[in-house]
Length: 112
Image (cartoon, rainbow, N blue to C red; front, side):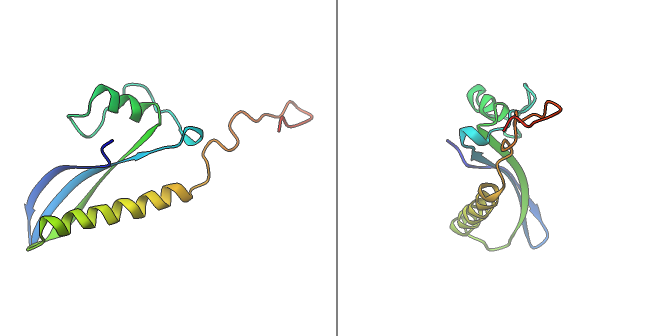
């Protein structure tokens, strides 16, 4: 599965703008489906990849960063990998969005 996808490299002052998406795999019990038919920011995403984004098994996050002039491809890749790992750690530490899903109160007691 792709995890970091570079979408655009555009020249800028003292460097260049890099646009990219991160794709984070999500564990079964933590998935939150999206509205069906939501496209990916990556125009070449396959139908399977788009389905994974829509069913919540993948979270897609778009971002941009300014890369300083003189940066090597190795430095850029390492910076993106570090940024991915940091964001993945934040997502992993979030409470499970489904923690209370389906629990109900019937007017006198809670289901769980």
